[in-house]
Image (cartoon, rainbow, N blue to C red; front, side, top):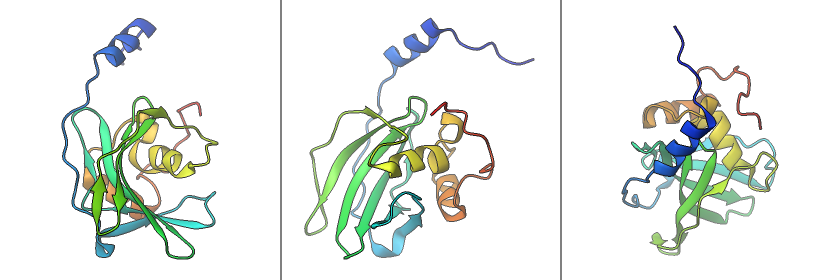
Length: 161
């Protein structure tokens, strides 16, 4: 017997009650720990996740360190989180020179399919949140990055986006 779908009121109530768990910033990424992933629309950058930073919180947020490397070798580093259920993303901190984090973060924002920052959509849909459901643990996420998607990568996009 399958579960009844939740009403709009129940979904809104769950969203209203949602609270983010406490977390700590990870160690600054090391080159040996980076796992590259594909963002088909990105031609001028290569994208990596620091495998040691990947985690899945009890709040349903997948947190990770993202490294975006330009063709000239310049790197942008950020520690981010994706709420799988709501399809939202935020940055918690940004990398600074000398391997340090800045404490300034961003607010949660919707991940859009056609946004200029297509890597967030790729991470959400193709690697960390299949069917808008968080991966079980970091190992599953690392495996998805290395495979080019989760084990059921042939699935249909049920997100409606």
